[in-house]
Length: 241
Image 1: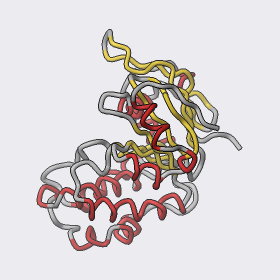
Image 2: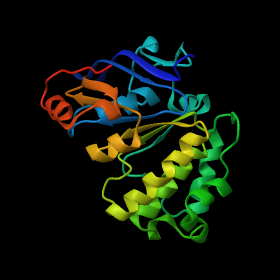
Image 3: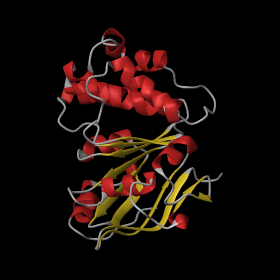
């Protein structure tokens, strides 16, 4: 089976500063992969590079085995890769429903069962109640639900989620993470950038740890110990089969 999304020796720069140093990374269809690491490790940069928000060589990112590195972001969306950005970045002054509607403008062609607003509302019932509410009047957790729903309405085969638990109460984080298996059950793969290591392990099948733009640990989430993760955070290199 062809790997859904992968990077190969991925390098990326911010001006003259190299932020990623040869990242090899892969996501299979329907899989949940976690990206962990300290602030500044390169996790969000990796998502930006995949999405075409940073210039990278064409062969460094592949989708279905085909080189797509450096594609424009809307082309990546049309190809089936979408992102839930850190900080949510919703459209202020627009309602929940209007924010969700925006996602369909550059959506990928559905493969299998399409995501619809009704399916998003089934996933997050509170959003149905708040459909006509301006997003700035929502709680942080409700805004995050809108951001995830907007990502799903782009009809992604892989959804890149950047710090979706950031700043949320533990109860709300549980609510959000509890519905993620329903997303992957429909065949959508997930990449979760997450600061909470325990949450990242529980929610994923595989895990990568980044440090200073390099992979210091990778393997099956269930096989990785706290000692492995601690060593990877502080720079010891591990790779688990």
